[in-house]
Amino acid sequence: MSARAFRSVALGVAWRNLHSFFTNPALFVPAMIFPLFFFTAFAGGLSRIDSVPGFHFPPGYTAFEYAFVLLQASAFGGVFTGFAVARDFESGFARRMLMAAQRRRALIVGYSISGVARALFTMSVVTLVAFVAGMKLHGDGLELVGLYTLALLVNFSAVLFGTGVAMRMRTFQAAPLMQVPVFLTLFLAPVYVPLDLLAGWVHAVAQVNPLTAVLEAERGFIEGDPVKAGLAFALLLGLGALFVVWALRGLRSAERAAAS
Amino acid sequence: MSSALALQVGTVARRSILRTMRQPAMVIPALVFPLILLAINSGGLDSATDIPGFPTDNYLTFALGLAFLQGTMFAAMSAGTNLAQDVETGFFNRLSLTPLRRAALLVGQLSGVLVLGFIQAATFLVVGLTAGAGLEAGALGVPVIVALSLLTTLGFGSLGAFVALRTGSGETVQGLFPLMFAALFLSSMALPRNVIEIDWFRAVATWNPVSYMIEGIRSLLITGWDGEALALGFLASGGLAVIALVLASSALRTRMAR
Image 1 (cartoon, each protein chain N blue to C red):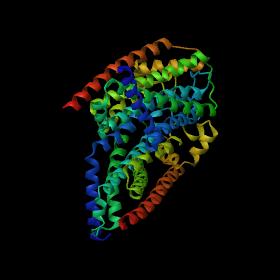
Image 2: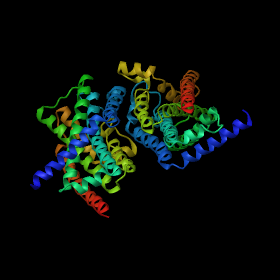
Image 3: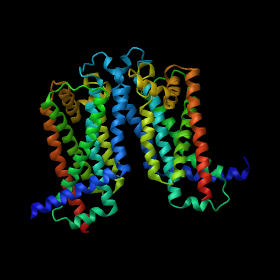
Image 4: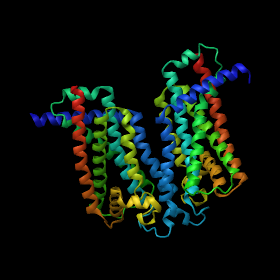
């Protein structure tokens, strides 16, 4: 009975979020448009970067930027799910869900399922556009599984991070607290050129940014020459575990607030 | 301008300026985000200066022009959101019962965004030059950069005001942001047009007026006094300002008549 109740709550929350995402243009359009803007601007506007001395990526600049936009789409899919949690708290709906749900951890699972589903949809559209733009993937089937698994792990961490923030703050005003750290972490990785070609303080920061290893692993999978794959998976599994605790503690904070 | 009109403009302008400055959530991102992107891009794209035909060996100087445009877009959102809030809260309805003139209302409302635009332009210049960006036009280039930046702010601010007055919805004004973002991204913001490799992208960037707004400011930083770039920059920004002001004025007339 308990497992069924858990599943019922999780799927209910996921369905509700996905329904409001796909039926509300104000939520759907920005989530779709932003990754496509980034892809168009970077892969189209910056394609000449691949002629810079020291730049070597055989699949081409479109594929080089596809790796970043894939991560960006999955990370922001998670952040936007955090926004949905904040909106639910602000409207009072989350408080009612907290009262009604027998197993409240199922709420986090439900939000995570909807976050992953949203990211899968966005990633599919970005991939389709990339292929239309002439992207070539040199990796084999297993490497492509690795590529998309890494992107989904990024999404999972971002959902849990956003959910944790939203459950602590319980207001949409917390949106920058979810968006800005993710944005900075993404852009302080080697976005436009490989790590070796970065200059100044951005190079120093990118060297210690965990997303650098993930991005390099993604590009390795695309190139068919995996690099830092183990490190990237270990980092994302570690981050995921950390953010599970972060989200659960956020849930406890929301429970305390609802009880008071 | 008659003294009555001047008084009306002054009163509305004072409210608009105070209101903008009292909202750190509007002022801080409008200053900080363009600077963050400037810092990231100047480090991340520094190697782009090795591309044959790139006009400078300092990417910070090249990227500084973009910060001004990003700032004006944030300012536009601020102007539109404030006006939409006035419509949503019924403040506009109350104003329409007073003898306040439409011109005073529009000019006054845009004053807040122009003050924000001035603070942005000064901040970007000081931070950029301190960080090592060049200013080939010399000290005389500073007022021209500020003037072009303010004209662009007026253009995008009026566009935000038009959408706010037309729809009366802050959410719709926020929906303008992705469109402005698209206009920015499909321009010569990251590389000069002659260096853009993809034909369709170069064509879009050439037709996109935002390219000329950025290139006008950029020319003063990189080239010095380039009459053509400046004329195109002022024409693009001035054209946007005129069109958006006419649209906003027309929307205001309709809104006040309701």
